[in-house]
Length: 574
Image (cartoon, rainbow, N blue to C red; front, side, top):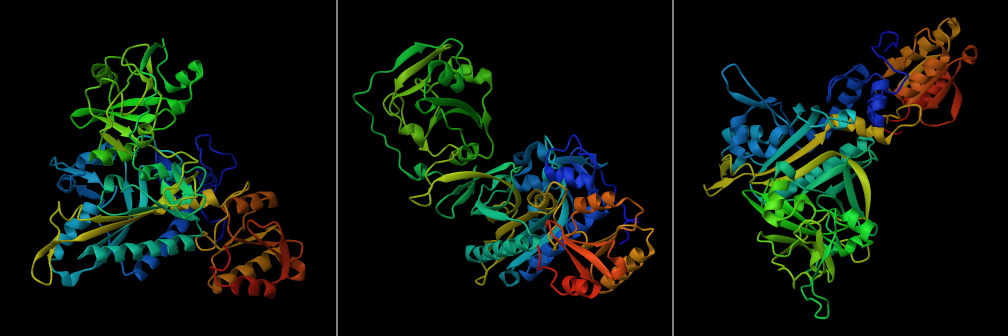
């Protein structure tokens, strides 16, 4: 491709509204352009990278026995009502009506659609197992789109779905997809970590893993052990304490509860700072709306409630903190003074709270708290569970000697064991070998294709621009003649360009009449792996070869250049 003909509108300045490095570089390198918040056009350079990502995914999915199809993006919401997810997905589900008033959704995923297809076409165990996949644009009405392609309202995703006769078959499909994902991310040149995760709105009866691209900009927190291979999303992570039974014995020598005056102090931070109290000695009481009723949740002052764990404990898919009016009605005091003593609602107690001996709690009265409180003595411990987020330094729940540490990650893929979550509600059944009707066992497997583009750049860049791995670089070789007015340079550049192209190499030649500094800046910015500079050595039949990301360069003759570039397999250097 000739750069003079390539639609490549690069930018010198960093866009003021681009926070993430990947967002900045994709805009500057002319790879994407915004149309609306969270909605982007892929320019030719960005589309080339995206297609290479798609092709690697296709190759590995096909090798794993999955079959590609393409399903509609517009989905009748009757299917979402049937699965029970219509209300669960909430405002992120983009809804629209046709001219006849029928409601549709722009699909953020396709469990309902694929289940409806398979239930209508397969009725016998002889046609199972089956894995179907697609690469398709998805939609999600994000409240706050940000970080470019990392959190958008329109995005490209690979979603796959497995159908098996039993759990053993599902386990096998799940393992097969997990192995395929590791191969995919390895070929893409992206560093990922598989972590235990929560199934969220997708749901399911079995395990789920997220594949996290390690990056500081990541919105997900990964808790991992410094001693063993345990790793989990913060929403799912469990500390060693979470595996232990609570200690219910109280100290008979402890003092009786004592109410004390705390005017204007209604946060944990204020109690710590103004009264010089240790947050580990405080108990936070939070009031939640759980369905049609209310509950109280207790965590230690230095801990935070894990809403996912709480919802699982209650068997709910949605819940929220109570409003101030509800809090005052239940506790008799404004927000900030709630405590467990005397409450008439069910109290859910975190394990760390159950083991406390001399705590400070809210007094259920404005401007008052209570000290010397003992869980188990002063309020009942009927519902004691692991309800908190882990913190750095907590003991690992998987091994005896390890402790948890935190890192940030971008979710680029997730795999789920759905079990009969959808097949039961949507009546996707088959006849087994004995003629009995059975529910299909399902799994689903997603990869954020457009997210990968951003994630690779987050991991592979320097101060000058992008550092593409060979496998997904928009072009493999960038030929940069110093002067288009020098006939010797241009003749050699054209000769090398034609020969490399004939050898099947993807080559971009910068034939623009621009200053050398401009050409080099653009070359570094777009990050093509190999740069061949045609300059002062052209008369000798020699060129400069530089690998993007390496400081050193080499002066080579043309034949040596071809042996160096065309000889290695395409995936050898990353």
